[in-house]
Image 1 (tube, rainbow, N blue to C red):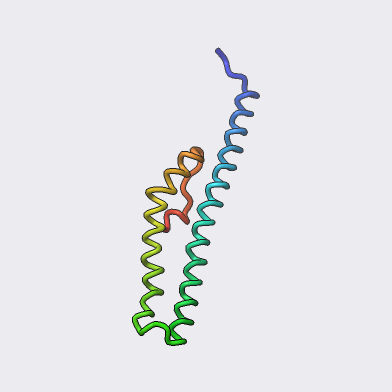
Image 2: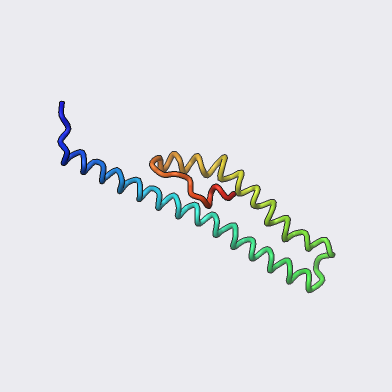
Amino acid sequence: MSVESIDFGEAVEQLDARKSAQQARRDSITNAFTYLFQGMGVLVTFATIVLQLTGTFSWLGWFIIPAYWAGVRLLFGFLFRIVIGPRLDAKYPLSLPSRAAADY
């Protein structure tokens, strides 16, 4: 049995194209979660500042900001490692986790 170089070359190119497409899709999903985390953080930070300046919370309300950035970061890290990462691995088997996912 012999393998023709033309067919082999096409197969490799198609595999590379599929790998690139899967990596792009995986990275876009990972980036969406990163933007969601950061966007929610900005909203929580601004809302906390406004509520603190209007006197709605006691001085303990200032702990909401670091609690969000630390606590939700841990939650997102857990979700990426336990739930989201394995699902992305199954859906896009030719892709690798991006750096953004590793940062969680």
